Length: 370
Image (cartoon, helix red, strand yellow):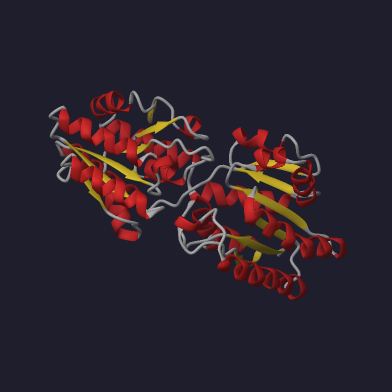
């Protein structure tokens, strides 16, 4: 059995890359196929400091460096998997810790995989010739893992890698077949549409757009729609904006904020929802985990054209909208997408493409075949 060293993000904090890391860490498929050791990339204690520099990151970097050196010396992996960052302090951290990995690879036959969950490689290398040289140095003779073919343009200026492969994200379902049918039965028996926003509470992810939609629902006299928001605040300003907006327009009976949810609370929100909204305009959006989670509950999706969202959503399972049309599109979805048949179609889309088993099996095949 090959030894594999996984250097990756996992919760906390909760974000797209850490959710993928959680699934790798807990994967029965990977543990059966590989003798795996895991090192956590610590960079942020909460989502509000992601992308920002602070003193803790230096300490985390030093800790990471020595853990990697120790593992290379005593664990001696044949496979190294690394969750890479395309720019910023995290890029330079990856660059420095790659040095002992490159030295180790010269002394042993080792396959190295860099998995990118975010955009930014191309914009970073375009800033200067030095950035381009450093990125090419980092990725020399490696296999690059990208989560969507839409990201292929990210490495158009990189020419030192050995191979590039694409692997969609996957998520674990918390519902068996019987549970799902019970959830569907409860949905169709309700006379109220329940709209769920579950993502990080930053404006780029669109919670402000949904708040505007809530206001329009109230002003239109529609009393059969409720909105639930869940996620972690990015800043105090975001929290104040949300609370002030709800108070100013008296939306308390229409909009409920549940905070950062996990476990049974998260399951309850997905189960009780009838439509999932993902109005992201985040420039670095790629393959959102929350959309896949919604599909695992059979929820139709109302999303914006960000990242690979338009590749995930088709006319059978949802609508690609925009800020100007979201209110009208939501009303149409309430009429056309809240049905037993449609909930089942959404669930089948998940089962055929986005289960955690599909992701874990493909990742294991990639790691063991190179």
